[in-house]
Every structure is written in structure tokens, then in C-alpha cells.
Image (tube, helix red, strand yellow):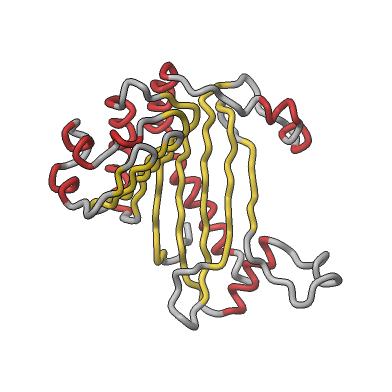
Length: 246
């Protein structure tokens, strides 16, 4: 596998459902044994309100609202700790917690050697054949590609490719976000065409009512799918990286 040197390599785990954000604090995570005490104590001026909690503590960034929990890090050495924290959170979470979906996500920035390589990637991600007649010097600002899941879960895999905002002045780079979205329901078969996937009936099937009874399934996904999801993200990153050539 040929991978670029990553200027930023981040990962996140997201839970969608019903939560009590005011309880998801550094102190609570430490008291439940979900976060090392020294990590929790490193949190500086955490924001804690009835509707929103947000804090940074050592390697961890956390955001909690009444319908979304996010744990993230930009330290690849802590990816296993991130996964362990997410699983432990589901095990120890507040009695009112209900879940409907899980996101296993990766976001990276990498530099390219020249603006020519930068534009080559943009033109392969989004060819300009049909844009040249109607726009002057069209360029790719953001491209989002969605794929159907290949396992037994509802959901989708979404890849976003954009110019990086994290490069030094005068340098060019690429940002990739790989969102591996799992709805907490299994199906016997997946859509076999784009038309079927985008049909109103199929889109309606993507909704899952949040439930405490789905917590074990969410925990199973994080435990068993995390490494595969990160490997798929690597393949996407490699594929985009290879687009710079020719």
C-alpha cells in the first residue's frame, strides 16, 4: 500500500440517539473508569451545560448534545484507546441513554507536491468535461461520494474530498473524510442499484428509533468493525493519493 505522509490523521466515533450531555464530563468519565484520571484532570475549562458538553483532555476531544455523542482524537497511537472509551461509554452510560446509529470516522490531511497535482486530484474526483462550457476555470471545492454498505447493516459509507485548510501558506494539500455510518438494524439484502438505494421506500428504511435495547448492537459494531473501518479508510486515502499521477 502506497500512502501519503499524513499531516493530520484523526479518527472519531459518533453515537446518534438520546443522551444526557451534562453527565458526560471529564470527572464522570474518570469516576466510571472510562478515562485515566490524569487525562481527565488535563481538561482545561470544559464547557458543561444542560444541552452541550465539550472539552479537550490530553489526546481526547469530546462533544455531547442531547442527540449526539462524539469522541475523537488526532493521535493515531490513541486510536485503540478511542475505541475502548466508546465501548466502555456504552457499557456505563446514563440510564436515559438510547442509541440509533454509530459512525466510525476518519479524517486526514496530506500535502501534494504542486498545485498541478492538487488540480489533477480534483479533476479526477470531479471531471470538468461538463463544467468547462458553463464555468470559467472550474475547480473542485468539495466532492461527496456515497456508497451502499456491503455488510448486513443499514446505512452508507460517505467520502468527502476537499482542498486542505491545514497546509502552510504556499502549499497545496488534500482533506479526506471517511464516514462509515451504521444504522442499528440488520437487513437480509442490500440495494443492488443506485435507483433502489435512493428510492423513498429505501430511504425511509434508514430511520431507526433510538432505543436502550440497541446499545449491545452499537457496542458490537464498535468492537468488531473498528479495525475494518480504519482499513477501508486507508484504501480510500491511497486511492485519492494515487489520483495525483497522470
